Image (cartoon, rainbow, N blue to C red; front, side):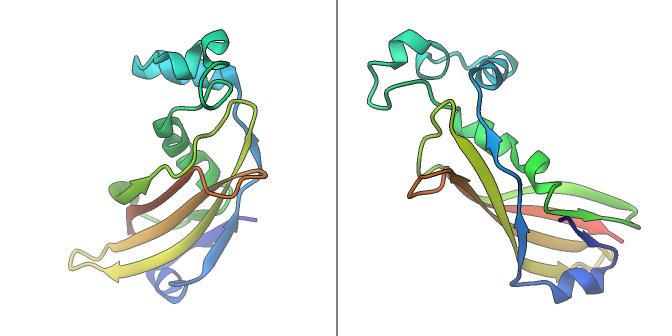
Length: 152
């Protein structure tokens, strides 16, 4: 279920809470190949299925930045905004990739609202904590703090 923020007060009140989890998403070789084409990153560990079988991972893995790029899509299943004049991605405080995502794996995003700060221009700066789990994995594929500025 999507948590919808309609005011600064709602966002400020939600600090420290887990907002929810996304659906599981399978990472396919097609998605990895399309990402490689979009970014120009055709490193063999991502796109050469036969060669990657002899790698330490036993197969192709998703780009770390592919995992990062899934946050807006998966995050939209968890939270959103209504009655806003503007919302924009302001950046990241940190991004780490603790575990590779093997092609064929499923990932799921969990999001918390770590911080909310009212800014002098009337906007609210929100810091979302994201953890991208790998089904059956012991470590997440990604942990990050993403910063969004919202003008309600």
